[in-house]
Image 1 (spheres, helix red, strand yellow):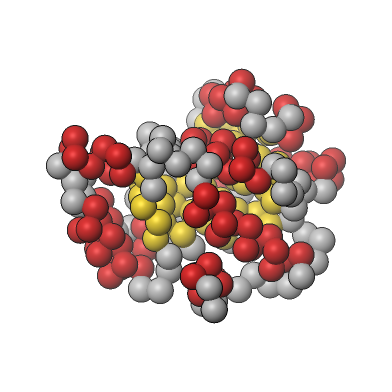
Image 2: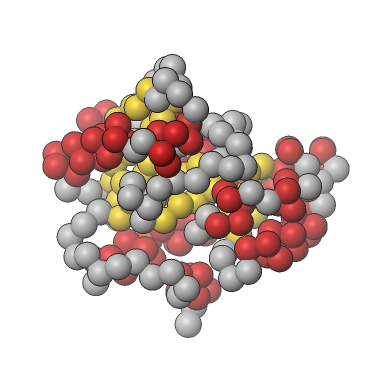
Length: 218
């Protein structure tokens, strides 16, 4: 069994051939959620059909960023303005996000829909009525204490991404401590330490996502 297969073994996707895989991407402000969405779109758009839903409280900032950088055609990106705490729209009242996802699925029949949360805190989680799997993104700039602070996003997300490893020497963060604390809290759920600045293709995360889509297709 490969590392990627092992990472999914404890929570396989239900069989649903033809249904888009829906992956939520959450985490605190500034961790790199939009950068990760952009990287995944660039890396995967030649392999599969994609669509994206972004969430911001009052603006369409993240959707505008993705459109400006041409990661997908404009019509494959939808912006949700939550007008409330970000976790409310992805966990408590998911109606606006479900509507956006359903519209994209009806128009484009994608293999993968990425749903990016607005920036929130360590308690943010997605409803599994909205997504199949969730990625939680934190960054090294917050210090190596972040993983051991725990919270539902850190502990229960299907994949934890610790981003901006290139900043560790500048902020005095110990990456081995962050990895060890994350693995201790998360048991068998995977954790990846990356620098999207140094790895703009987000290759290990793209592989993790691709394995999900392949499993759903088969």
